[in-house]
Length: 373
Image (cartoon, rainbow, N blue to C red; front, top):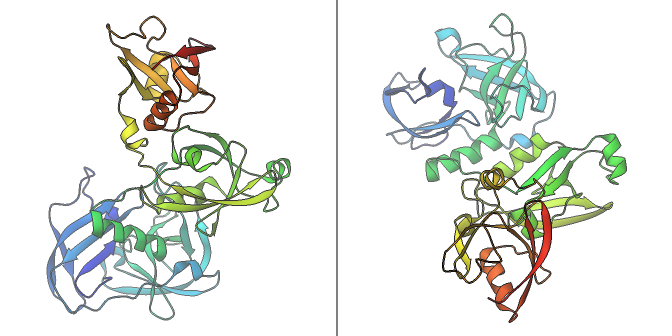
């Protein structure tokens, strides 16, 4: 219970039926013996979290602590109903923080667990991990064990991350995660030396996609990201979690190294389901010439090299005055020496001169066109 008016935070898998859908009926038993019907506010399988709501007021609830302040060795208590025996509390310590790459939540899951040796068994899932002051620091989620019982390897979702997911579920009923538009590689000691990264860890930008947030903000191939919103980033996993904590349209502060120098930029995140916003849809760039931003589907359709980014022609109308010069599959790389960042930007570049100098890619070759809009 995380609020006096009946909001409950638990694991998504606890309220999920075998078919992968939420259970049809949800009942919550309170410590005073009352059973209350609960409704599902929202769930997020990628983080294995869900929020329920019961209709009641004045309910006792746990204050939520800042789990980022936890340290290895801190005393914690795991609360749950292991094996269905009833309310049970076990004691242990924080064995580690930010445990990832465990494949507990699958390939698309967001893993950054608190590891504890407090005994956790089947039935503990969704229960509270609390500190010595009775504050919520985690949601008990999983164990690693060959026997199926506790061997001191228990894992809980940190409360700070869980709280951000819960707020999104209460507000929107779902979790919308932003994206930067980059391809990445973890930095090891060798790469850190090559790219002049004294932190000896971070995430190397291998490419940026034109028209998406990273490119629009000024991040470049070869930059090494070392922090997001003031939190150190050492691996791609770290970065995924930090970026995913912010919804599309929200700005994140990106700290990075470029040729050894430390810089910081604000980047407004895009929606993965519609990364280019209004530019995601086919639009008429020139009279009778319809374009869209290059994506994986269009790249495959027109056989475009993965390095090619820009506006690709998807249709040329029969009565277009550009039909002789332009064909579907042609990609606008630059207009008057400038890489277009959006449809409106491309239009303004074309309108800036009576005749525009356009650098294009078509069937494996690059060339210039002189176009009069």
